[in-house]
Image: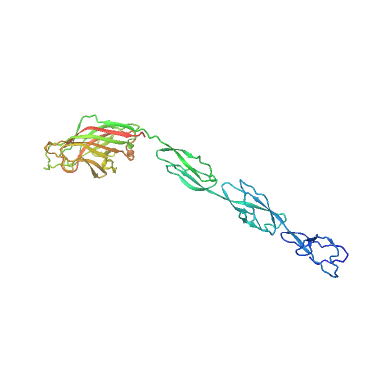
Length: 423
């Protein structure tokens, strides 16, 4: 503003204020830099000084602007905050946040167009406008909570941190011998605002009632022979059980116990064609034939073969421990190492245990023993023996190489017990 000229004793209005100051509103004129307002804008004044050509200085008087901050909860579901008043050029803390939002944590205030302030941040000059309004918006960060699915003795559970409000999909859990009945508590549709554990509920399954069926050999005592002229191989077969199995029973999950007495074991006293009069080991076993198939000296594609404690399918041996058979009631004279025992046998396509017996053939010696063996048929055999199939069981007598023919024995009291579950 330029200098204004006055005449003593002549009233004249002050020139309108032409100054401006950011953040302040002009109020009038003071007579010193730090003085209070004396004159209004364009006020009529007279005789400000009596000094000829004197100078009278006036100073613009300013008032700092007042402005306001409004707080927006920006999705808050709890709390409230009133407007806060600020004065330009005076530093002041923002109010402490009073908003809450389920599943979220407050991190500060956003100002549209730029600017971020932490809780109770000290601010100054957010706007220069008189009675201006600044809006701040709560900034929220979503929380994560630990969601646990406890399988409660089963398998398939998990435990993970998940965002609040995200969809929960319960896992599929299993537990042997139990039926899944649900989760406790009931699974929410989305992740709640707290750690949560859902525990699987189970009902123990009632095991099927075992079915026990016993087959007894009702035929006359049979005699097994090995022809003395044969140089090793199969001897006679005797069918001891007819139509084992019945419809509705899964033969291949059954546990079998086979018992029999082998009596009157002796050598017929015939001469060996090669003059070999020494004792030789005989082998006793059994095999089954699917009903309707024909018995043959060797296992075929339509029959299965086992030597008491070992069940064999062609080229598919099943390992069974030697402890699966028990021997008792042994009478007669057996050679050293020749008492009834299990002996491992291996030949092309079939490996199994068989009963080996070597007894003294002299002096009309007659030996006997009782055997009890336990075994299970594997499900792997079901490709040829199906649920409901029946089969016959034969005992046989065999020998290894060497002219050890002329042996004979009888079978008595044969019994086969099958313990299974319906399936």
